[in-house]
Structures are given as C-alpha cells and as structure tokens.
Image 1 (cartoon, rainbow, N blue to C red):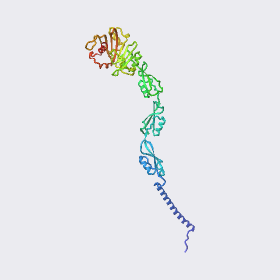
Image 2: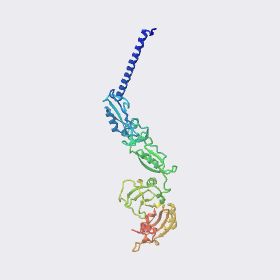
Image 3: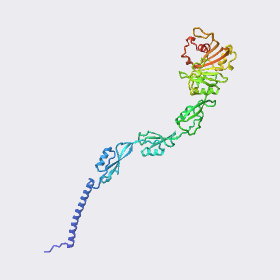
Image 4: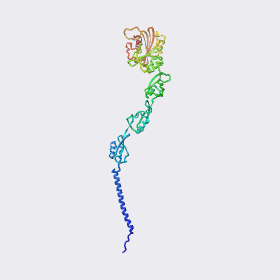
Amino acid sequence: MPRERSGPPGRRGVTERWGTARTVLAVLLASTFLCGAVVLATYGLELWGGRTVPDVAFKNHDAAVAALAAKGFAVREEDVPVDDGVGKAVGTDPSAGTRLAAGSEVLLRVGVARIMPDVQGVPQDEARRALCDLGAQDVRLSYRASDAPPGTVISTEPAAGASFRSTDAVTLTVAQALTVPYVVGKTEREARLQLESVGLSPQVRYVTSADKDQGTVLSCDPAPGSALAAGTTVALVVSAHSPTDYHHLTEYFAYNPRILSGYLSDQGFSLKSNYVAGDGTLQALFESDGKGTLVLGSRPYSHTFAVGRGKAAGDLLSQGTPFDGIRLDLPSSELPKGASDLSEAAVSAVMDLCGLTGRLQTVNQDTVARPEGPQAEPASFVCAYGTMGDTCWTVLIANEQGGTRATVTAARTSLYEGVNLRPFGGSVCSFVAYSDACAT
C-alpha cells in the first residue's frame, strides 16, 4: 500500500510555535487590560494618586467646607463680593476636578455682600479703583465746593457700610476749591441759595435801581471766583424798587423792611432810637435835616416816642423787623398855605403831598367824638381819615403852643381792630385826633 505523505518537518514546527505565541500574547493582553482596569478603578476610587477637588459651587458655606475636608484637604477661605449667592461657595482654587495629594491646601471662595467702603478723604481715582475692585460697574462723580483738599471724596451714595449690587449707581462727591459763584444778574433768592449751597453766608444790602428788575443782584464782594473759607460772608447789593416819595407812607407796607432801611438812609433820615415792642414789632425814631421826623411803630397816633426804651444795638429795620404803623411830622417848611386856618385846602394839599386818596371822614375840635367826663380845652385842629386797600391814613393839622404843625399817619387797618373805639363813636378818625391833639 502506498504511504501517506506529510508536509515538510520545518513548516510544521513553525505553525506550532505561532499558535503558542498567539496564546501567550492573548494572555498578556488580557492581563494588561485587567491590570489597567484595576489601576483605573483604584485611581477612580482615590486609593492612590491623590484626591479630586470636588465641585462645591453654590453649596452653602458649611457644606462646601465639609465636602473639601472629607477629601482630606486643608481649607483656606477667601471672600468674594457677589450680587447673589451670599454665604455660598463661588468656586475653588485649584478648580473642581483637579487631583491633589491628600492634605493639600484648597482655597474656597465664598460669596459676601458688596459693602460700600469708607473712602471719605481718599483721592477720587483711588476711591474709584476701590469700588471697581468690588465690582461696581456704574461709578459716578459729582463735585461740591468744600474746605476739604480738592479732588478728595467728601461723601458717597450709598453711604459707607451700606450694601450695593454691582449694577447700582454709586456716586462719589468730590471736593472742589470753595469759590464765590457767579451770582451777579441772578435774583436775590437764586443768589442766596447758590451761596448757601457752597457754604458761604450771604448778606444783602438794597439800593434803588431804576434800570434793573427788583430783586436783581447788582454786585457781590468778594468778587465771583474768589477763593474763600467756608462760612465767609459775601456781601450782595440787590436792586429794589422803593416808595415813589418818602411822603407816601401807605406805600411803605409793600416793601421789605430791609429795603426801607436803605431807602430812608438815602433820603437823609438817620436812626436816633429803636427797640422791639412786646408784640415783636419795631418801634423806631428817624430824624432828618429839613424833612421832618419819622416814627415806625404800633402807636402812630401818639405824638410822643420813648427814646431809650428797650434800646437795641444796630438798625432793627435793616434786620427785617416788621412794623405796623408810620408817623411823619412834617417840617414847618412843608406846611401848606392856609395851614394855620385849618382850611379844607390845607388838608387837601397835605393829602396831595403824601399821595393819599379815599377820604372817608373829617373831624375838628368841635365835632370829634371823645370819651365822657371832664376834658381839657383841646387845641384847634382838623383831622381827615381814609383808607387805601388794607391800609388807613390820617392827616392832622393843629394849632398849639403858638404854632401850627401837620402830622400824617398810615397803618394797616388791622392795627385799629384791637382798639376800643366805642368812646369815640366807633370812629378811627376821632380816636386818632383825640389821641394826638387832645390827650395829655
């Protein structure tokens, strides 16, 4: 029988060795994969290679600290200003997912409210940087005259210590050199407000001005632009309309007493005595050379003035002290023709001189209503009375002590509302005439 033929001995050996190698390789690969899986698994279980920084963002403070401590990290904290999430973790350094050796330090950033710092006295650029470092996005500047060093912060809004959000407007008020603002041409009220707003003290003097609106500032001293200390007085000269004639007493009530003070001075009247009565009204005596005597007070019907009584320092009228009545004793040079005859023409002449209209009554020594009882023989006189708006007036011409005098009074009608006029037949005219010409 024929024999079977087999392959060459060399090829058979190679095949057997290749099969063995493949088996070994497969075992090695399986072992390697298994080892890798074990390594990865144990690494993930943090059995070696350190610990992973956990993600603690938005956890509250205590929970974040506990999570980091559980990993074996040493925790150091840092405050971070935030709008939302106060008291919660903002993040860590190194960041979450970083692998660190156990015991390594991890910085925990914790959200805190943005608190306005105290930057008073700090230069404006430094203060602005401090706010930007806190996250402020809308920092505004305003300027105000101050004694503080120019360019330094004198106040903030919000105030120091207040909380704010990054989008809130934050205003720094910065000191400017305190200088006199330009107030010439402004109204008195505008000028006062502007001076007071920068810490200066206005002092007003009124002058008559025909070509400027009433209440307009004509000049100031020190001049605009002058550097001053806070509280310094700035003198303002303000235009003022005034009575058309110093004889026109009823017009006086339409003006600020301060204006009248300057006006009377311009007219040649000088203050002899003044004081404030118990009711708070002015009692003042002014004299002149050739223009008569003027009294401001609550008893214009009285021909006496208590000089020295309650004497006060300074011109109270210039300080704005109010008054209720006025009395002008005309000089003899202004007595009208026929004054000694107590004629109607003389009364009318005085009325015209003083701009008086609206006469309501005229009495003389024979027709005057007077209290009952024994009376001394009165001087011869004629007295006219009238009203103009809310003021009333009288003109009295009297012959007494060998001479003739003429007196004009004006008062608010309310002055006589508190007077008992019944003994005088309810007549203001009789009351004034009796008080001036008959009473001793």
